[in-house]
Image (tube, rainbow, N blue to C red):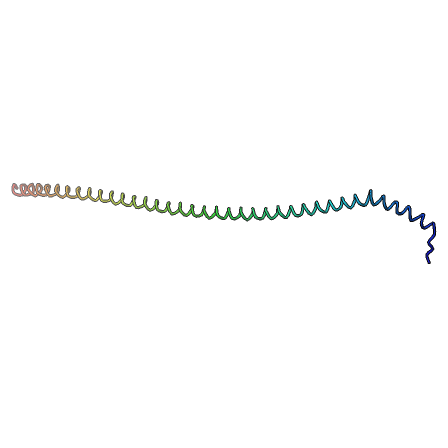
Length: 139
């Protein structure tokens, strides 16, 4: 069995004194530092989660904005393409009508030249036949 005597008391008193001083000057400051550090880390984690969620929201917003801008660009592109096709068809139609007018003018010119040539030939045929007749009769 354990004997409790004065030696144990003399050893226990310095232990209590050292425990008091170590607790007051070393353990409590160290524990408060550890607790503050944990709170700081927890605060930073919470703040980083908030920032991360904000980043995700902004990322979604920007992606949505980009998609919307791409859709608008496609609409504008399609509109410009349609306008270009319309202008192209107008230009082609105008060129066809100009070509038809030029063809009609050339046909008209050919007809008038043909008519003039026929008239000239008719007068020449009459002259030639009179000449031939004169030559045959004079012989």
